[in-house]
Amino acid sequence: MRVIRAVGQGFSITHKGWPIIAVIFVFNAVIRFFSAPNEDIPPYLKSMGDWGIAALIFLIMAIGANYLLAGIQAFAKSGIQGRHNGFKGFFGNCKRYFFGQLGVSVFLSLPFWILGFLSVALVFGAMTTYGNYAVTSAVLGVSAAVMVIVFAVFFTMTSESWAIAAADERGVFRSIGRSLAFCGGRFFSVIGLLLLVFVLSIAISLIVWISYAFILQGLRQLGLEGRAFILREVTGCALNAYFFLFSASSLMAYYLNNRKEDERYN
Image 1 (cartoon, rainbow, N blue to C red):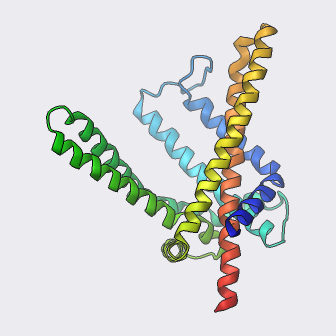
Image 2: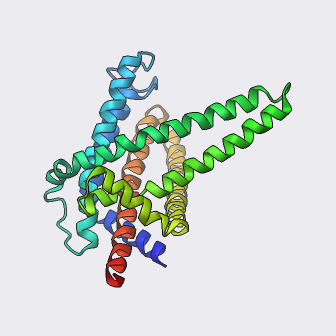
Image 3: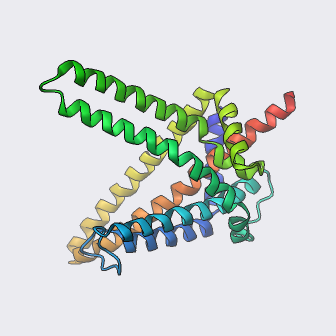
């Protein structure tokens, strides 16, 4: 019930945050414009073959996402605590919590990248040795499975770090440490929360893209198929913006609700 309640609150906060969704949408659209390798889109910096440009776009995207996430966390916190202030002060909160959100992302990104790289390398090794070295391939395959499990566990244990950094205004390392302790005591509930958010995101996306397919058929009938890419990009950016706010709000709601109960019994 706590998981369902958190997701319900996440939806409630999200549906009150359309101005914030609009800001995230614009950010996504700008990033998409400059990075999408699509012949239908004539961005100024379209070629991803230039690693310098690709790295610059990734850096801007990472900094911008953390900047907006800081404001989103504060918006969700105030809404869940009954102090919903609308869009007022959003960018001020982005600035206020930015370094905390960015610090958590930076320090967690290293183990995430290491675990992800090792998982991919082990899977690749298992595939390339399958024909000639069956035992080696099996060992690498099992190791890859174990690494994926380790990655999933680590992600679950640290998933509340960003919410805690804004909710408790803790430092980076204290936020990560608090997340490990908080999620460790509610491990399977947190997994249930993450899975529910993921499943709902997939379900809503399927409904939206099915609707998009019907609209696309209508555009073809009107002879406007050549402009369908605009609708596709707008739909994708809108979904990303919606789920960015929804997932952050759900995680914030789950943390605040359980923190309140922890304080009650301590």
